[in-house]
Figure 1 (cartoon, helix red, strand yellow):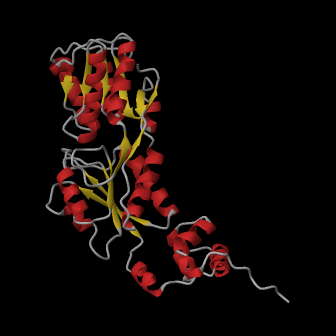
Figure 2: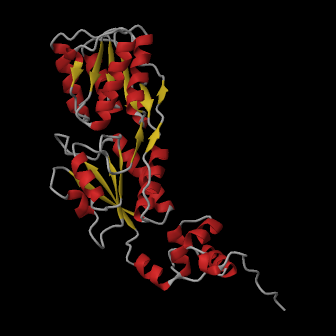
Figure 3: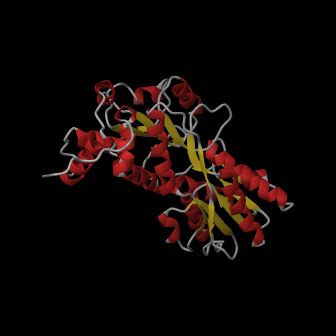
Length: 344
């Protein structure tokens, strides 16, 4: 005779789906699907979750189940590129972040819906989360759209953004400490004897603006001047960055160091410098920001400030899921790490 199954001491009425998910070591969406016998969940996993739920005395709340069934199981990942002259998703940083987000969402039972925002439209964030379209929104970057994102957050849209903290911000962000990143990158150039250091990047963008502040702070600490003529408002595209550095060189810009707002800009700067006969790092030291895979294979390999993109993607997904549940998640700031290679 089979002995009766033992129930947990916790009263069944107090059990939540989250408790079963914790017992099983899976996401709530996986528990929900397993309890509905969804073929999307492996048979062995379904049986294990169903057994745990039965032993715990968990019964599906029909009202809660009805509410959950209205969810789509989809998260919109949107890339606002309003700031770019040519809005492309082929940027290596962007592709890396998208890959990490796809993995993190899949691990938690969500599908990803990708959207590119090439031009400003009123209410564009709210349109991304229309009923039946998706359950929440992750934005990769803030572009010039802080006001639109704030408006959507005030309207109750569950969202988060990869970016930086801004005044009067109503939405949670996940991102690198950009001021510190700009500072440690520039500090490294200063320690290597560089005195006229150019900054390449559009400081009007929130993240780049904070990197520029870190650059200026490092120069002040070293008793050096941030020369206005050495600030090049370069876009992220490789050809635009290359043209910007060529223009700086051709106008007689006197500089011995470059702090770039991204690795793509930095690699483009190395190309422009090499073609003009300037050696890297002997004549000009170059530092980047992001630590994309391409940076390691540049010639010479690029010194850069690393952003923890895999960890950031996981935090973005956890944050938007918390917002979907009606919680008020906090922002997360990740520490930058200087990766020293041959370019500086």
